[in-house]
Structure formats: C-alpha cells, structure tokens
Image (cartoon, rainbow, N blue to C red; front, side, top):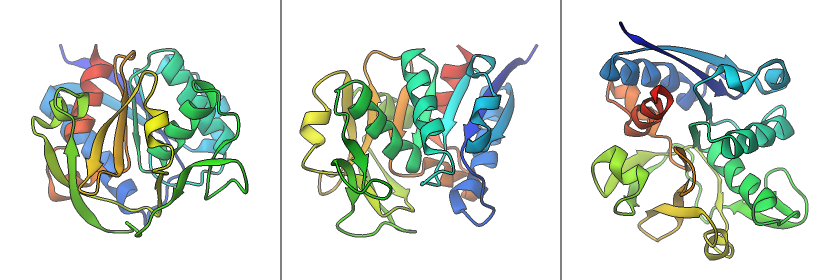
Length: 229
C-alpha cells in the first residue's frame, strides 16, 4: 500500500513566477521517485490562520516575498522550528527563516529584512549583485543535510532574488544550533540548516527549478523523505 503524505506549500501563488511554475512538478517528481502518494495544499499567506499545521506532514515556505501576510509566515516558520516539523524554505522562505531565527532564538528583537523593515539590524540585506534569473555554483558543507541530499559537494543552481544574508552578521548567526552549510564561490551564504531538528533546511537558491527540465530536486526529495518518517 502506497504511503500517503500531506504537505503545505505556504506562499502567495503567482502564475508568472518561475519557481511557482516549478514547485508542483518538483513535488510530483519527488513523490514518484519515493513511491509516495503526496497531497500538496498551496496556502495563500492571508489564509494561514485557517489551517492547522498538525494536519500536515511537512511545510515549505515558497519564494515570493514580501508576503501578503508576513507575520503569518514568521509564525509558521517558528511553529515548524519549535515543533520539529520537516521544513523547507527557498528564496523568500530562506530569508524569512533567517530573520525568524535571529529574532526568536538569538534574541535580536530588531532583526529585520531590508525589503520590508526601515530600521533595525538588517540580517537580510540587498545583494551586492542582483541574482534575478541568474545561475551560479553553490558549494555544500561535507556531511550536511544539503550535501547528503545532493550526494555531492557542489551544484549549479538558479535564483530570483535581490536580497541575502548580510555578511556582517553571518558569523554571529551561526553561533547556536543554526549551521551555514552552503555558500557561493565568494563564500556568501546560500543555505542553512538546524542541527537540533529532524529536517529544517533553507536555501537562497531555488532547487525546485530542476523540475522544469524534468529533473529531480534533491532537496524536495529529502524534504518528502522527512515528511514520510
């Protein structure tokens, strides 16, 4: 009997967003590779309060920031982190996961995102060079969940973003149970994960884009594997 898994895709769907086009086939391809029956509910951020996350086996905060309900997204990420629910964040989901961690684990109450916050400590700041519809090499820390998912120590990945981790804060961010496990070739942060969580991985790159070439996204496969457990 095929195992059934229900997952939440949290974000505000836009038909013209490349990542949003890629996500449904990325989930389908990964589900087929794992012989899972996956139901994926796309949840618009204004509707977050109408859903109970206990009803889901995993949560993915998808690209598309700023969200229509930023506070709901932060609350969702915090819930997944504190309740050990398998979590994937890509692009905006990565950025918001970093801010949530800085605020609620490191106690940086003024931690903010330069796209949406006028003051405070911008842990997410404008990138030196825009990565809108760009590709680049990313490297992975040996033994990390990201490296294990890829079965490799580097990959060429696509982006659609203008914001990333502020290099001024990257060392301080990684002082507790958050590990920086992916970088670009200039050693700027491209992925993080938690050491005390069964699966909490967030990347600035959009691994789901592989599905547009009918290829598996290793991170979506690993996320669904965690959901199935």
